Length: 374
Ligand code: PLP
Image 1 (spheres, rainbow, N blue to C red):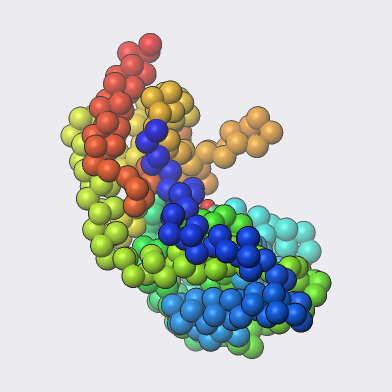
Image 2: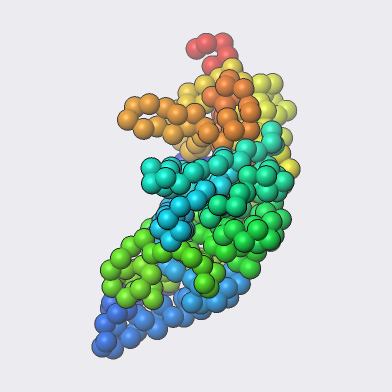
C-alpha cells in the first residue's frame, strides 16, 4: 500500500504511542480527581500545556486542549459571535469547512459572512483582506496554508492589518503544524490538530490571546479553566505534545525529505503526462502537490490508483450521494474541467522515492487508459 494522503491524516509515530500507552494502562486517572491518580494526570496535563505553549510562543493559560481543528475553529468563530451578538465575519473563500460551515451557522443568527477570494495561484492578498474588513467586523480568519493546494498564505501581514483595525484574527494552522513554525504572537487565535503530524486523532489545541472576547462553546465542569467542559483526554494530549515536539525538532530535515519526494513526483508527472497541470503557485508546503489531469475525471483516477494500492485524494466532497467539486480550486478561478480532474498527493515521513516512482508509472498507465476510453 502506498499512502500519499498525509494531508488527510498521518500514521501515529511508534515513539508517540509508547509515550501515550502508560496513560491508558497505568496513569488513567481523571485530571479533576483529588487523589494520587488524579494528581498524576493533572501533573501530566500541566507539563503538556507548558511544553506546547513554549513551542508555539504563547502563555500556558492562553492554550486550550480541544478535540481537533474542527472544534478549534468552531469555538473561535461561534465563541466570538456569542460574545459580540452582532457583526460581520471575514473569511478567506478557501478555508476548510470547519471554518466556512461555522460561519454559515452564524449567518442563521444574523451575522454577515464576507468571503475574500484568492488569486489564480491560490494566494489571499493582505490588500483584499483589508478591503473586506468593516467597522462591524468581529472576526477575521485566514488559514496558514490551504489543505488542498498547500499554498502558504501571508498571515503575518494579514495579522498586522487586523491588529491595526482591532479585529480578532484567527489562523487555522492545521496544515502547517509540523512543517512550518507556528508563532502565536502574530494572531489572536489559532488551531492545530494532532493527527496531521503523526499524533493521535481526536485531539488538538486552540490558542486564544489573553483577554480575547470569545465565549466558551462546551459547557460542563471546570476543565480547561472552565472554558471547555468534559473529561480531559490525557493520553491524547500527551501524545500530541510529544508528536509536536518531535516534528519541531526534525522540521528542517523532514522538509528536505518531503520536498525531494514531492519535486520528483511533480517533475515525473509533468514530463510524462501532457495533460497534467500544477494547481497553486508561490510558496507551497513541501508536503503537497495538487495536479489536474485535464480531460480525465479525478474520481476515476483516484479509483484506478486505489485499485493499484495507491491512496490519494480529490478536492471533491461527497455528501448524501452528491459529489461537490473543490470550492478551493473554484475560488481560484480554475476551469470546471481542471477542477474536476484534480488530484492531491500529500507526502509524509514514511514515504519513499520508490513509492514515487511506482506512482508515476501507475499514473502514466491510468491516464493513457482513460484518454483512449478503456
Ligand atoms: N482545518 C484544516 C485546514 C484541515 O485540513 C482540517 C482537516 O483536514 C481541519 C481544519 C479539521 O481538523 P480535524 O480533523 O482535527 O477536526
